[in-house]
Length: 172
Image 1 (cartoon, one colour):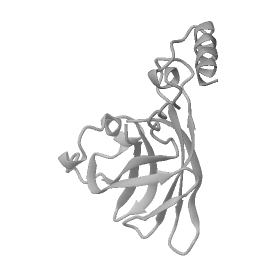
Image 2 (image 1 turned 180 degrees about the vertical axis):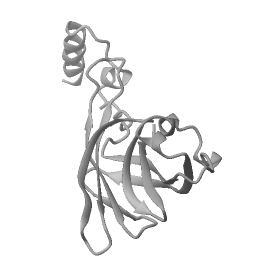
Image 3 (image 1 turned 135 degrees about the vertical axis):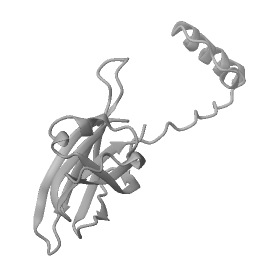
C-alpha cells in the first residue's frame, strides 16, 4: 500500500510538470519553507528638525536631505537636528512620540501594498497625526502611500522662533 501511494504521488507530480522533493519520494512530509518577513511590522525613522531663518545653515548631523533646499522647505535658511528616532510600527497599532514643543506625534502602519509591476517596490500606507498639548488637534490625520527609503514631511508647528519639520521614512 505504501508503494502504491508513493507511485501515485510521483505520477501526479510528474503530470503537473514539477519534480518531487526527496521527502515526497520517500513518503515523508516536506519540511516547511522558512517564513517570509512579516509585512505586519516595519521600522520607521523620524527626524525632528527645527527650521528657522537665523542664517546658521543646515546642521551636518541631518545628513543628505535634498528636499530642504527646495520649496516649501527653502523658505527657511537654517535647519537644526533636534532628534532622530527609530520607531517600530505594527499594522493597526499606533505609536506615539512626544515632540520638543509638547505636542504628541502618532504614527501608524495602515497597510502594505504589493507592487503592481515586478520591478516596482511594495509601498506602505502610513498615517500620522499631531495632538497639541491640551488635546487639540494640529494635524488631524495625514495618510501617505510611502516607498521605503523616501521621506515624507509634516511641518508647521511653531517652536522657539521657527517651526518643527518632521521627516518620516520607512526603513528599507
